[in-house]
Amino acid sequence: MMLGGCTEGVLDPKGPIALAERQILFNALGIMLAIVIPVILAILGFAFWFRASNERARYRPDFTYSGRLELLVWSIPAMTVLLVGGVAWIGAHDLDPGKPISSAVKPVNVQVVSLDWKWLFIYPEQGIASVNKLVVPVGTPISFELTSSSVMNSFFVPQLGSQIYTMSGMATRLHLQADHLGTYPGISAMFSGDGFPDMHFTVEAVTDDRFAQWVRQAGETGSILDKQAYADLVKPSKAVAPFTYRGVVSDLFSSIVSAGMGTQDSSLSVCSTSQRADR
View 1 (cartoon, rainbow, N blue to C red):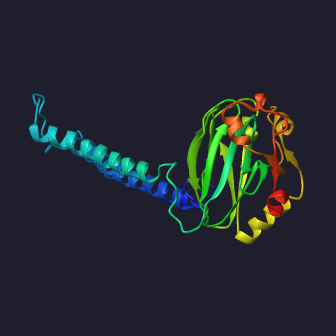
View 2 (cartoon, rainbow, N blue to C red):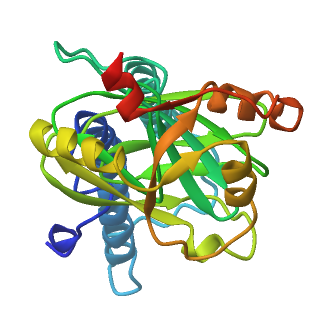
View 3 (cartoon, helix red, strand yellow):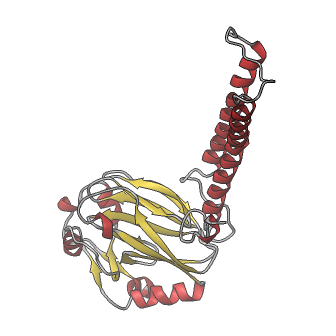
């Protein structure tokens, strides 16, 4: 009853991945309670039966071994391990972060970069980017590609599921989906320095029309995320308010992954929303 009041966490899922992960937690909890509750009752029963005033209790100081008791003591924990392990094994494969979500709707691709101490979200197909704010259409799979500009970090939206690490020079995959309209907190789930307490972001799940409107507005305001803008953004900063970029340098994410931004030519082409519309 107390847990029923919990919100904005893993027990309040808003997407298929988080919902499935919560079910794994409940399954594992049920299996373990099937052992824990009888053990607690047995302890209470043992203490009551072998109390000093119970003359019917048999005192057996020479008792050393019972095959039936040994079978009971070892078989129940073994069954518990097999059941919990089976649930975890099946769930881990079904909820593989790199496994696309089955849907008739085309996924939205988002490239994520963890910085000190903020999050950069690049929308390669829309030609825009945002900092500390992720806007996604509700009911649409989101295909994430994640990396880090420096130290290892951890991307986590508890109500959507699947915490995953970001590492410099590597790109990891994650697929999530929001099934309900709303704003969900996203966090850094791994300590990464002085600005860690403020390294959080918001995820806004909106309608398709509202998402298209946001993309349009982002493409008309803000600056362009080019080589110099990224060099300024990557500098450590704390509690950064969300903002957007109207254009993004081509192949910026792959350059970050390969740690080759410093060797790229400054004349990299810029692909903005307006340019895509002209094409």
